[in-house]
Image 1: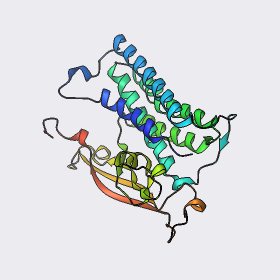
Image 2: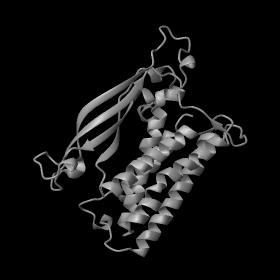
Image 3: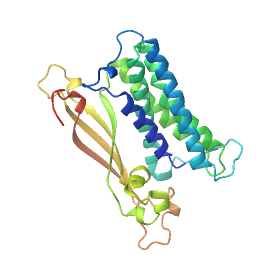
Image 4: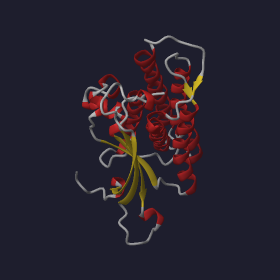
Length: 271
């Protein structure tokens, strides 16, 4: 299945932007005790955003294709698993936002992890249900596993360390491949960022200081491992040529880089 990046990514960005901490906005400061008004605001906002996103996705993505009985497909070999990594990333980001929203409302740790962090998995599972009833696609066990893994990364770190020491990140560079299939890989820069797997790179960025607290290692210094893939005109290799000469060669890429955790920089820095 081709990952529905635009809607899912937008869903994550809206949550992150609406509830990220700000030094100049006391409204975003988490409550020390449960604030019923804030909690209700969180639940209503989640319900509205999730419903609007799913309805919009259904109209924009599925409406033009016939329905079918619910079914599964095995798409684990497609796009060199870049779509699966995208599911993992989005599930983590939406779950993180959900957990932070409940922390903002003063909810206890258990509620943050169950109702907040589970938001990403529940939302993306709902997307899989839509896939399952579409004749064009189908629900994917691989997608569900990736969704669960993204949620598990957030929850496990909160349970073990009470903080997020390892964070998924995303970067993008333009490629030539979108020129061959702009309808699939994007015709504008914005569409390419969301659709062109060839230009996407997903990272796991680890904060070094958090594993050696008390050391002289800068608190903001991270080391990141990245994964990407190129040469993909379609999901399957046998459909990848599209009568092109020479035939694009599909290949994976792995990266190692230093990184900066901006949340660990002093708040008095001006950007």
